[in-house]
Amino acid sequence: MTITYELGKSLYVNITNRCSNACTFCIRKDEPTINGTDDLWLEKEPTKEEILEDILKRDLSKYKELVFCGYGEPSYRLDEICEIAKEVKKKHPIPTRINTNGHGNLIFKKDMTPCLKDAIDTVSISLNAKNKEEYNALCRPVFEDAYDALLEFARLAGRYAKVILTIVDILPEEDQEACRRVSNSVGAELRIRSYID
Ligand code: SF4
Image (cartoon, rainbow, N blue to C red; front, side, top):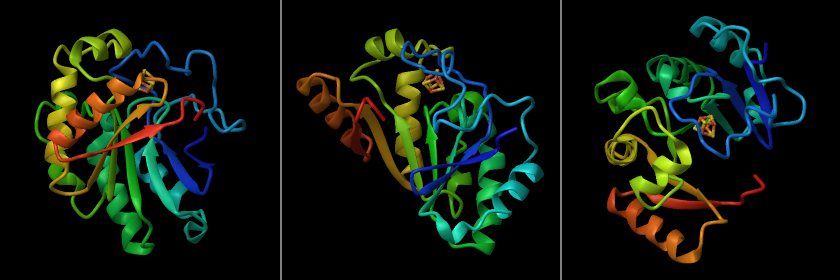
């Protein structure tokens, strides 16, 4: 079972396979891996203790960042992620990031962003689209107001961490600009990722 794996210069943590989206572009149904080696389908979700042990047995000085993600949506376990990140930071001053769809507050039915404080340095949220209609068509969320909720999550998370909203570069330029305005409206920066990534 792969709990942690290397990608580029970072160490990634595979927290869960659950997800509150069913994105049309999701590669999970066809690919068991994103780094070419590690199978990211979990036999069972690792416990908090197992995750911490797996992280700490690595030489963390080798990595530029510790990234909580999943082959799924990590914020299903946001409370545990923040606890793990705090424990890791006590031992190693490594920057931390969570890659999320921003549904954490919908999943927990409350504002979870205060738990990011002193735990997560960067929150990277997939924005994917310039409005809720396009988001719903592309990401097919289980939650009705997912787009508005992810923007509110971004705004609230900005009190505790650097927040980046992301899109891919295949969007038309005018849509990219619209996404930039949406991001800036909640105090976040927009990052445009290469689709190949
Ligand atoms: S949010 Fe990520 S894991 Fe979930 S369906 Fe979309 S691409 Fe796949």
